[in-house]
Image (cartoon, rainbow, N blue to C red; front, side, top):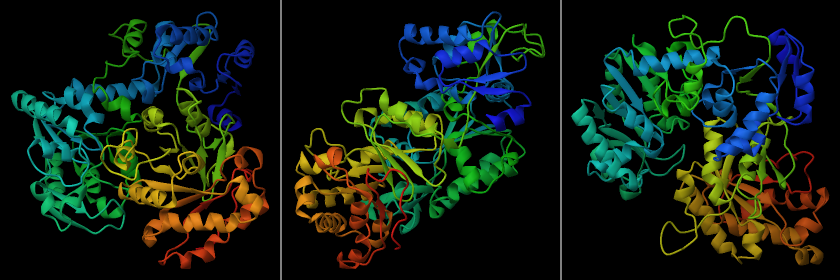
Length: 596
């Protein structure tokens, strides 16, 4: 808090909890001109509860901290679309005001919905139509033109009767898109879909690729296996021309897989067009903001970059946020130039301010078994005993911590039933953590009830998936051949496998654990390309009774990990060493990976 106090120019205290004894004592001792920062409100499950009474009870405890004549200031635009206790319920219990950030964002949204200068062009991208249902629904009849790119374009192509090969497709959304197209035609809104796309052989940065007509994707060199990863150059130029002729432009969602240089041209063209037009331009936060910054554009080259992805486009209505009624009900009269903003002088009492913190020195808390992985990864394991809230809570613990993870990538692996919740948390709050599945099927389709395909994990945005976790080997009796097939299935669908290897107690006692582990490793990587092997993550994870009772010491871990390096030339193909993982015993620090 010292740095925050230095920037703010007044004393700032950090409470050890949200509404517990630490927060109450600190609030009671606050003096005029001082600030108290509460612990992350999402550490209390009531913050996001669907039960109004539970949220209300938590809100009452938060309000009690403000004392008499308290007030509420909302300056967390990235959360204003959420019906959470600290956003919605508190605002109904105190005189409520907009902070400067939220005020600016709301004014921008009003320009996009009420006082819009025309022509009004909207650029929509991103992976899925289902993620943009609300924004598309609200823009029909309001926008003059909607330019469609990203993975969602293939559902639009399919709705028009075109084949899209192996490109991302939401078949269940085809009727929805067809309805949108009909409604748009009646309402005077034009949907523009790319006429050419960049099709790749596979989902990889170095994949072979070519540009083909959007209605002839399966005619590419890759046939039905081709995957569309970007809009084509003709479409990019056409979109840029539409943007140039607009007076207002709203952009949400990249045009392709901009993280891969070969498939970033479409997104770059849109960003460049926005910087060159004289129109009022808005970049809708989330992936769009990340894309323009990744591609080297400065924030001041655009009219406005929103701080809230979901908040800015999930409704596209400046007044349609859960707490908006409270903003206007207890503010200055609408005629006041300061309407909706914090008054210059607060009444006697304390203000409860809702904001976001992007801290980078984080703490990892207990609760679940951590495994430090080489080259900066952390797994957080959740078994069936974890319940509904802990996976998301663990994600928050990992991203709101006090240890330095500047050289560490943090990942959580929740049960499949909680993946969507973790995805919403990570993407909605732009958390600097990754997430993945606990297992996947080696099959893409078929009568495999209960199995989860790699395509499913890819659509949920999973970066990783565990393969061969100790229980899969010991309880489910999955063989090395099955696990090798799962590793390949993960790569096929653009998900990085974390191959788990390790011995049981009997193997350890027999003294053959090093060779045993290396044989698992050799079998697991059989048939991989050198590029796949370089991307693979290997986790040394002893199985059965050994794991909880007789964890391997550091010496044992080093005996198992280093031999991996010289073993690679004997793996039936040339490859560089994948990223290995240290065991649960060596939690103090990740050891240096063996050289490739």
